[in-house]
Image (cartoon, rainbow, N blue to C red):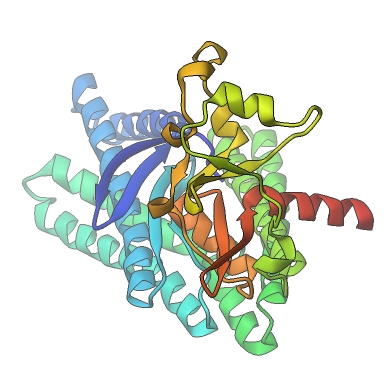
Length: 372
């Protein structure tokens, strides 16, 4: 989903970041809140209701972080690796580096977020009741947060993938059908259908003059459409790679080069019209790392003569070893979690080849062209 991200901070081993489109939504929401407060509290000054609007908006996005953090903590308790939480155009997304292995785990992870939002809503409602007689500003903020978090719960429980309700639906279908991919397809189809309905509602709102609500409906519909399509594609890719092992897709003829070689020498050793994807870097007969051609071409050409390959390679200590019989799907999940592009394939201490993401993508392109 989000493609342009900015890192905020790291907490409990989880990276918190925002998609830059979030800035647009933050500004829109702050403006809407300031306008709402100016109408409900006419005794407030312009500065007052703008400050309250901005602070309320920040607190709302903090509650979204708590919602996503609940997902992450339950996932981690179930043994699923958690990489990041991203605030994006309409809420938050938890990046969990591995799919749940059982429908029961998926259900628990999915329901954790809505339960956290219910707790936040209840706490804000209590704060509103306790402060409404003598702390008008606090009461106004607490009331809005109680309401919006309840709305967040109801919205997230819509059975449209990838909302929490859609994931709960998928876990139920998974348990009934016994097929993860089929359950994902059904839940994604429900998500796309829901997005179409929201677009129709947005058109209706324009007709009756409710342009602000129409914009929100359009944004939500767009999010559901893109996200459900993305999850559908992921399910298709998993099915296409099902049963494949590292030995099926690895490059068993990866060129070997010795440490101390300059980039200029490396280029001269490459055959004309050859497009090597990567090189094994050896020190004598010992593997030291892997160098990709992308790493080479990222260096300015006038520096090639003085740049040695070991300065660019991914060192052995940073590589993840896999066995030839390991499934490609699980290897890709691990590569995504660890941010690596290729892995040596080793059996009984012998290097058999290298498997990279490019090898998997190339296989998928050939397969899709053959079936087109």
